[in-house]
Length: 127
Image 1 (cartoon, one colour):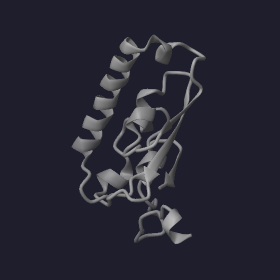
Image 2 (cartoon, one colour):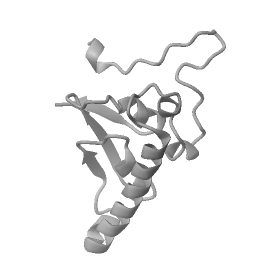
Image 3 (cartoon, rainbow, N blue to C red):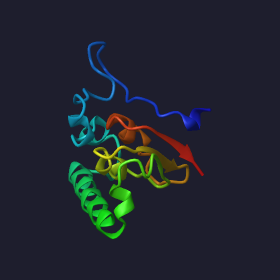
Image 4 (cartoon, rainbow, N blue to C red):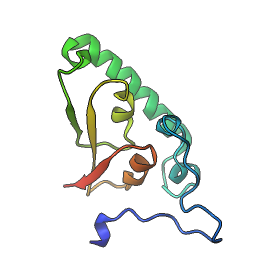
């Protein structure tokens, strides 16, 4: 069961918030998650997070020009991002009436499920 848990980072003082303070909704969707700003995820920087967020905004806008049904309210309700990484796709779809399940592959080199949670999104592991 331990491999399925996303542990919070350690704290040194009882008054500290494990992992860091989260922004309020909806700002937390695009603000740098504490796991990234603290450097606890090796290889992922705040710049990479921002670039990924902007990339997915552009991709979703482009996809909507190709397939009008993606932007059609009520057409899709549940979407599955099978390689969610930082949850950028779900964040880009936030203004649409859809629910996105973010899946982080068990085999992923970097466990980013905690970032998905800190953004206020939902997710799971799967292989």
